[in-house]
Amino acid sequence: MLIREIMNAPAITVSPETSVVDAARIMLDRHVSGLPVVDGGGDIVGIVSEGDFLRRGELQTERKRSWLLEFLTSPGKLADEYVLSHGRSVEEVMTSKVVTIGPNATLTIAVELMEKYGIKRLPVVVEGEVIGIVCRSDLLRALANMLPKEKVQATDNQITEAVIAELSHQSWSHNGFIKVSVQNGVVELSGTIFDERERLAAKVAAENVPGVKSVTDQITWIDPYLGIVMPTSSDTV
Image 1 (cartoon, helix red, strand yellow):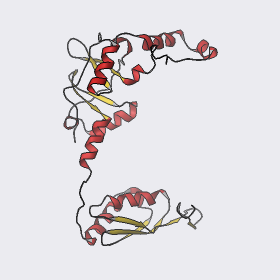
Image 2 (tube, helix red, strand yellow):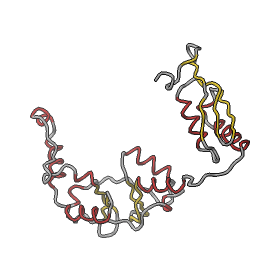
Image 3 (spheres, rainbow, N blue to C red):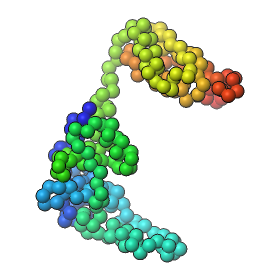
Image 4 (cartoon, one colour):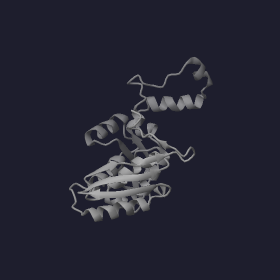
C-alpha cells in the first residue's frame, strides 16, 4: 500500500503570517492536530502542531526551572523558549525542519520516519509543494480496513497447514519444536520452546490464520541453560 492511497488530500495549510489564534481555531474547526506551513509559492517551510501550543504564556504553562538550572541554561535557549511561549504568528512557533514523504512511498517508510523522528504526521510533498498529509490515525484507519471482519470457513487440515507454514516462516520459532493440531477449528499448540516469549508469539501466529476459532496452549518451556522445565506465567500465579 502506498501513501497516496491513505493520505488526506488536499492538505489544510497555513502561511507563516497566520496568527497563532487562527491556527489553533483551524485545528479545532477542522479536527486536525497539525498544519503544514507554506509560503506564497506553495512550498513547505515548516509545520505547526498541537505540541507547539502546550508551553504558552496565556496558559501559564511556560517552562519553569530552579534558579540553578536557569543559571546553567544558555541565554540562547532561554530566548528560544520565550519566543515559543509568547510568539504571535505561526512563523515564530513552527518547526522549520520538516520531515516529508512522497506520495509513492510505502507505509513502511512512513512508519520508519515517524519512529525515527518521534513525529505523528508527514506532509506529502512533490517538488516542494504539499499535496496532502498522512498521520498516525490514517495508518490506524488503514489497519482497521484490512483486518478481517467476518469469520472464514476452513477445514482443520487447511488450518493446520497454514499455522505450520506461518511458524516455519518466523525465525524466532526455529529453535523450538512447536506441534500443531486442530479439531473443529480449535488449534492446540504443544511441544517445547526455549524462550518464554515464543509462547505468545506462537499463539498470535495461530490466531491470525483464517478459520481459527480459538487457541489452546500446551507448550512446555525448557530453560536452555539449566535444561529443566520452567513454570509458565499462569503456573506461577
